[in-house]
Image 1 (cartoon, rainbow, N blue to C red):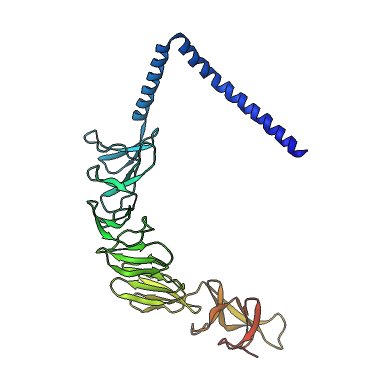
Image 2: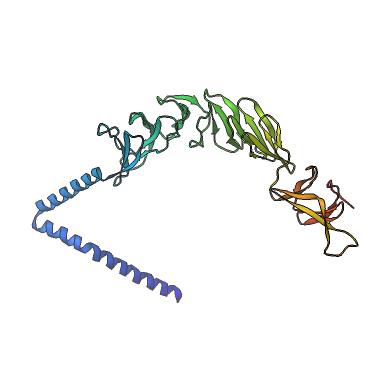
Length: 363
């Protein structure tokens, strides 16, 4: 019963929609039919004038997209979704119709542009010089990144690598560069992902791999330093000048609070060390709580403050001695509570057991 009712409602809605469409377009059909009936010449004239008006509207209807400089402006033609560059000093267009013009071009003078065919597809990328407003590398690449230090990453018909300012492929890469948007040269090298799992490496300006593409993640840090993570989630820090500052053996590494330093986490202990290996802060944690315990024979509500504190690293709890700052139990437990002098209860995965101040189990 419900199905037949739904079908009936759908049929009624369809009839209503069809009637509305006929109501809207019937005046237009009537007008065209009247023109054809009384004057075919007039009909042709109206059509021609309409087409010309549309073309003029497309050519005239534009808005300022952005200013590349005080001299060269980028205009957007809203109707056709195309862009052109104009020399405002000479009041002259320097390019034809482009499908895109990047707003960001970094320190290099070449900015990425693209063209599409009349059907709006088959997009190809090239480059325009912001100093002249003219296209210097014609759109020809299937995929392209930004210029930096005189090179830009591209992928095109089997060619993968970096081109120079003439459009010539000067650095060839085996495989495919997946992160074109971020594979930019900086201090003579670039972080490149050649596709697949664990394939990040550091490629030099001359095409040599400073670090082979075998790492899970590479993040640019201070100056020439990089934070590296391998497939086993071990972290290290590598420097262009000094090589491995910290080997791939840490649970986590992040930039420190000092000018040039790193916070290293290993076995539940976190500390800050600078690039020369000097310990800046020997003990870094997210938060801490001083522990207290109840003394036998005293009133039930009376607790004694201890010389120990529980600290937290990534929501895991550890124990340190307040007077010396020495880590007694690394941050590897869900919770740590003090039951009496020298006796602590630690929680791990729903289980709780007793340990001494050094983390040794108490039977």
